[in-house]
Image (cartoon, rainbow, N blue to C red; front, side):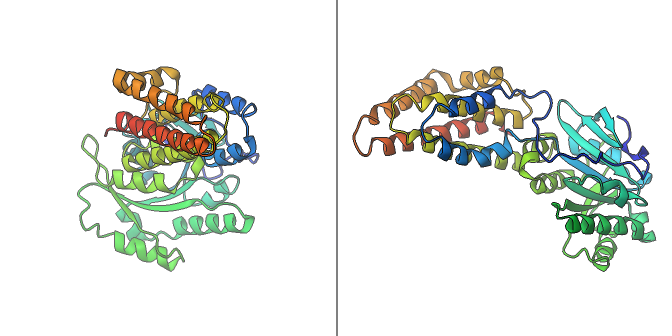
Length: 357
C-alpha cells in the first residue's frame, strides 16, 4: 500500500465536487436499471417512485465513502486503515492527494494530511468522516495544530451551508489500552477547543497481533456515514458487523414497503413485472454487503440455498397473491399484504444466508 501519510498539506480534492452520487466501480446496476424501466409501464408510477426514494439513496446512489485523517506521519494512519479493513489495501488512484484504496474489492477514498494546512486541504471537498489521529506522546505535547485544523474545517462547512463531516478523534497506541491514560487529557483538549461531547476512541495497534478497539471504531464510523455511502462503508469496514445487518434490514423494509405499494395495483400479473426485479435487487444488495459480487450469479446462489421447499412456498405465495386480486373490494389489500410479507421474508432469508457472521 502506498502510505497515505506522504501527502503534502496543500493537497486536497478538485473543486468540481459533484454531490450527485454514482454507483461504485465494478457494480452491476442492471437490476436497478431494469426496475426503473419497468416503472414507466406500471400503474400508480408517481406513488411508486416516491416509495423508491429511500431505497434509491442506499442502493442506486451508493458511492465510496471519503475518510480524511488529520495526523502526523508518526500517528500510524496506514496501520489504522489496515486494521479497519482487516487487509493491507493497495492504491488504485491518486487525485489531488486523495488516494483511492482497494482491499479485496472493498473501496475507500482517503486523504491524510498533516495538521498544518489541513483546513486548506479539506476546504475544496469535505469528507464523510474527519479523523483526528494522535499518539499519547502527541497528546502530552498538545494538539493545538490538530484541533485548529478540525475547528476551522467544521466551521467552514457550516459557513458554506454544507453537510459537516462526522468527527472522530482517535488515540492510537500499542495494546493493552485499558485505562488509556491519555484519553482524559485528549478529551479535555477537545472540550477546550469547543468540541464538546465527542468521545475519544482508543485503539491499540500491534503488528502481527489482533488489534484492540478497532471493531468498535468501525461500527462507530459506519453508523455516521450518509445514506449513499452506507452500503460501501459497511462493506469495507470489516468490524462493522452490526451496521451491515442494520443496513440490510433498512433495505429489506424499504423493499417491502415498495412491494406493498406496487401490489395495491388492481391488475393481475402487472405487479410481478416490478416485484421480480425488486426482490432480485434486494437479494443481490444484501449479498454485496457481505462482500459478494453484485451480480445474478450471487442471487442464484441464494436461490439454491432456499431449496425446493422454499422455492415452492414462494411460488404458492405469488399464486395466491394474484388469485385474491380477483376478489372485489378487498382483493388488492390482501394481495398487497402478501407481497409485502413475501418480500420481507425474502430479505430476512438473504440476511440469514449472507450475513451469518
